[in-house]
Length: 186
Image (cartoon, rainbow, N blue to C red; front, top):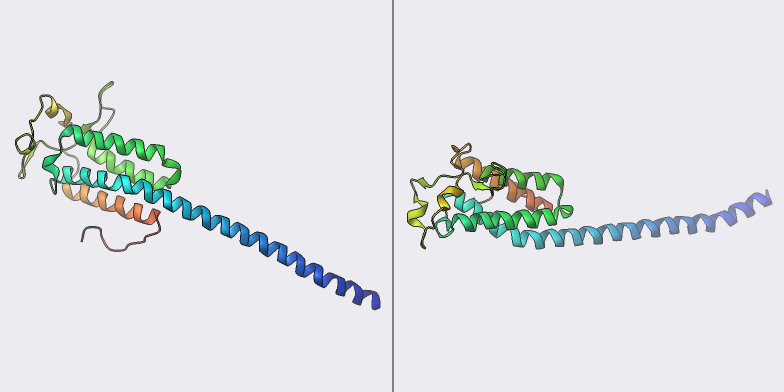
């Protein structure tokens, strides 16, 4: 009986010490995980700070709203290239679903890989009830710019472009921890 009391007396501090070690390790892992998540969110915010204005320019151009008339087809294609580079270079920092939503938005707006050696083309019309892009562009419309449009009949409506853009913005909001239930732009 005395030996049992001694064993229990000795095991109690050892048990407390073991529990302390386990809790300390768990707390360190939790702190490291929180630090890593914070750094990831900071990186995503940095990337999105650069990307969102360019994405908005694309949305405006294809929706014929905002400053669409001040952009040339060359400007729009350059924004696409800049965004593709930005997202592909930082793909590791975003979830695959966010990258897929970005890809769906770009595929909706651009015809890619249509011809070997040719760049992407814009999936939008030259004219609408908002005007003729060549006529309203404030500078000189360059020869050959009209060929930057796909010429393929539009497969998506302006409403589809809007919904896809809103879904993209909502997805990116969620990527940085902002959950929104309301629609963007309302």
